[in-house]
Amino acid sequence: MIVAHHGMAVEVLFSDGLRSTVGVKRRSGHVVGDRVQISDEVLDRLPRRTELRRRDARGGIHLVGANLDALGVVVAMLPVLPPGFIDRAIVAARAADLQPFVVVNKCDLAGSNELVKSLETAYAEAVPVFPLSAADGDGLDPVLEFLKDKRGAFVGITGVGKSSLLNALCPGTDLKVGEIGHITNRGRHTTTVSTLHSFHSGGELIDTPGFQDFGLVDISAKDLAAYFPGFEKTSEGTCRFRDCRHRTEPGCAVIDLVAKGQVSTERYETYLELLTEVESGEAEARQKEWKK
Image 1 (cartoon, one colour):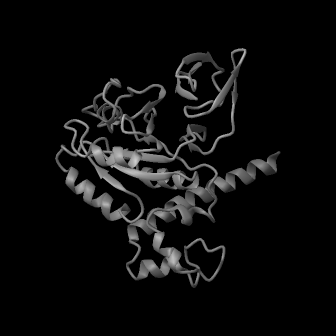
Image 2: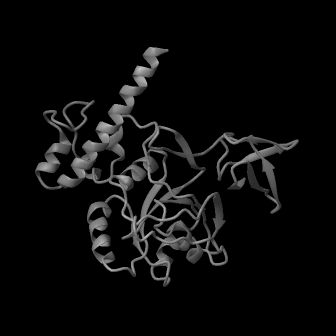
Image 3: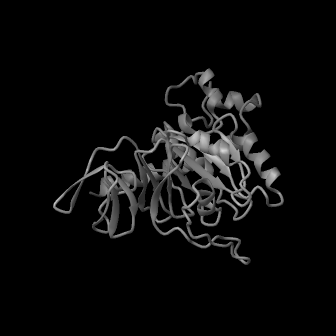
C-alpha cells in the first residue's frame, strides 16, 4: 500500500512490514491509500474501494485519497474558511461513500465557543462535530474513538492546524508546524506531501497539503440535494416531480420544510449556490462535448 507520496516517488508499505521507495511519473495517478503490486520497479495499482477527488479554482482535478472510510474537515477561528468549503467537502465525501465529520481545532482561541455553536447548529444533525485543541490536548479522545478501525483523511485550508492535530493524535509523528500570517490571516504551507499514519488505538489517517478550493467532481445537479448537509429531513417528504431541483417547483418537499423552519434559510441558500455551480459545470462539459 502507498503510505506517502513525494511527487516523483511513492513510499510503499508491504504486508510483511518492509518499506520501499519507488519512482513514479509526476502525473501517474497514484495516491496515498492505493493498494499496489510491484514488478520490476513498476507499480500496478489494484482496484480502489473508494476514491475522493476535488476540483481546484482552475478546473484541475486532484485525487485526495483512496480506499478511505471517513473524511475530516478541519476548521478553526483563524484562518477564515472560504464560503461553502465545509459543504463542498461533506457533499464530496458522501458522494464518495465516505463518512464526513467536522473538527474544530484551536478551541483555546477567543471566539471559538461561538464558532462551535454555529457549526453544531448548522451540521449537528448531518455530521459529527468535534471541538478540540491540539495545543493543550483537550477533546482528542472522541476523535480517536471515532476513527478507530477506520481510514480517514484530514482536509482543510492551510493554517487550520492539521499538522499540529496529527502530532497530538499520533505522538512521535513530529510534522512541521506553520504559523498564521499576521497581515493575511492565512496559513503557510507546511505539509507538502501526503502521508498515512497509524494510531496506537487503531485506525489510520492521511495528512494532506492544505488547499483553498474544494470544487465538486462527478456530482450531478439532480443528485446534489441527496448529499447536501441539512437536507436530511427531506427524506421524510417526497417532491411532486422526480427531477425537482428544489428552486421554485410546485410541490417541493425542500421548499415546504424551509417554509416550516425545519430547514434553515441559510442552509437552503447555500444549497442554491452550490446547485448553480454544479449546473454551470454541467453546461461547460456539454459545450466541450459539442465542440469535439
